[in-house]
Image (cartoon, rainbow, N blue to C red; front, side, top):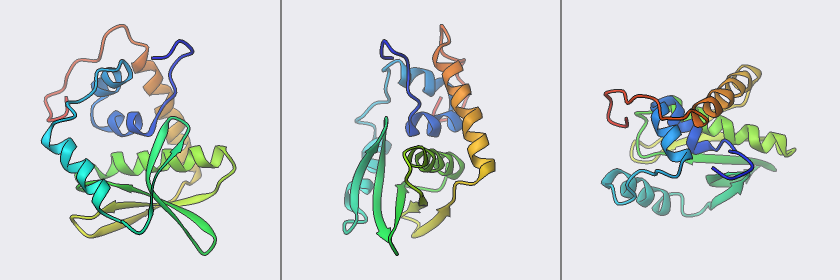
Length: 157
């Protein structure tokens, strides 16, 4: 954490839905093994798909995977290796849409699962924004805990 505090990122939103313990660990610079096969595969897919689109735009504390304009409007995409954690990915992308909106940019989002050849539209509506506000507060609560939450017996925890 920086001295001024923590900025919630899309990565923290994604991990919040999978394993709150990971939120605490990552926010304290205890990161997943970057040589892990799953991390490497995800990186490879991100680098070698959607080659005609622009890659990685930074918005605040987050990096959006791909983006382009369509009919004069911005479209951002989040690329995942599988749809296994689709709800986490959907909320991560909604978070990016929210961050853009705060900066006066209205965009639409697309979840992309290239191995499955699937795209799914994500729209930031009022209900999702309210959910994100709750998630931001909950992430900050976890981050400022003295110790990480207890692990849960799932692959990511």
